[in-house]
Length: 538
Image 1 (cartoon, rainbow, N blue to C red):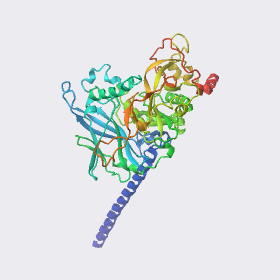
Image 2: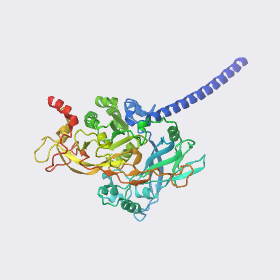
Image 3: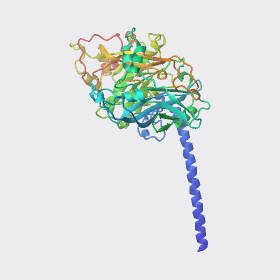
Image 4: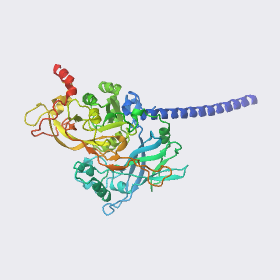
C-alpha cells in the first residue's frame, strides 16, 4: 500500500513538472508568435493602406477579422492612447470647476530614410462635460465636430522620458488656426500676424495640436520611452510602438517620404451614420469610376463597427476590396454621439492623413458627394502635379475651392426629377453624367502631403515647410519637435486649374440653384464616355 502511495506521489510530481514545463513552453511559443505577429503587423501597417491584403485583418486574431476586408484603425500603423485628467479652468468666473476628460493621443513611429527615429501624431481632449460657455454658442456646438477646449490649448504640456537613460524632453505642440487659413486666399493678408494674434488670444475652441518628434539616430535609441502630460500622474509606455518601428522593413525607394518619384494619390472619406450597403456600393463604384482615371489609386473609407460586416459582405463592395481600390477602416476609437452626427469627424480626418505619414503619398480629404474636377479635359492629377498648373505651387498642401454642382439650373433646364432619386437609381449609369451647372460653395478641400502638415481640421491645415537642423532628441534640452523650418498656410489652387465639385443634393434636397451657370470646363466627364454609351443602351 505504501509503495503504491509513493508511486502515486512520484507520478503526481512528474505530472506537476510536466504541466509546469508545458505551460512554460506554451508561454514561450506564444511570446515568439506574438513577436512574429507584431513584426508582421508592422510590416503590413507601414505599407500604403490600400495595399493591405483584401479580406484579411491587419491584426492577426483581431475581432475585426470577422469583417471580411475591413481593416482595424491601426491599419496604417497609428497607435491610440488614452489618458484621463483635468485642466484648471481659464474662465473660473464663468465655470469654476476643473475641466475633466480624456486626452486621446494618436501616434505613429517610423525609422526614417536618414536613419532617424521619428514619430508624428496629434492630441484630442475629449471633455467629460460640455463647458457652460460652449452651450451659449450660436449655432450650438453640436453643429460642428469636436475641437479642443481652450484649457487644453493653453494648459496642455506633454513630455517624453526614458527611465533607463535618465533623460526627459518636453514636446512642442504647434496648432493651426482655421480662421487664419481661411483668410490666406487674399495675397495681401498678414498670415503671420494673424497666427501670432490668435496664439495670444483665447478662443472658445481650437484645432488639435501636432506632435512631431525627432529622437535622433535610431541606432542606440532606448525602447522604454514613456509619454505623459506634465502634472498628471499617469504615463504611457511607447515601448511596443518603438520596437515595431525599429524592426520594420524599409519601404521601397519610390515609397520613401520626399522621394523624387511621383506620389501615390488617395482619397479618404469619413464614416456615415446611416448606411445602405447596396447604395454605398453604387456610390463607391461611381466615385472610383470617376476618380481612378484622374490618377488616384483608391479610396480609404472609415466605417462604424456596426456597419463593417454588412458593408464588407455586400458583393459590389467585395469586388472593390478585391481590386484593392477600396480600403474599409473600422472606426471604434471614440464612442459616437447619436445626437451629434459629425461628433468626431475632425478626429477621423486627422487620423486618416496620419495613417499615410512616412510614405510618398498625397491625400485628398474628401466626402462621399465630392469630386475633383481638373480645369482642362483629359488632364489627370499627375499631369497637373508634374508639369501642369500645380507644379509651381507649394507641394506640402493645397486648397481646392469648391463649387456646388447641380443637375438643373433652377429654371427648368436640366433633369426634372429630384437629384436624390438619381443617386438612388439602380440602373442608368453614373449619375454624374446629368450634372451641368455649378455655383460657388464655401470652404475648400485640402490636398496634403502627410509628412508636412499639421492635423487636418475639416477643410483646413497648415504646412510645415523647409528643413531646420535640430539637436539629437536624446541629448538636447529644447522641446522635441519636427525638423521643418517653419509653419505657413496652404496654397490656394486657381479655379481655372481645378476645383472640387460638391453634389449638395446627393442624399437630400438641401440647395436650390438660382439660374446656375454651366459648369466648366466643357468635357469634364471624359472618363465617363463609355458609361454614357452603356447607360443609353439600358
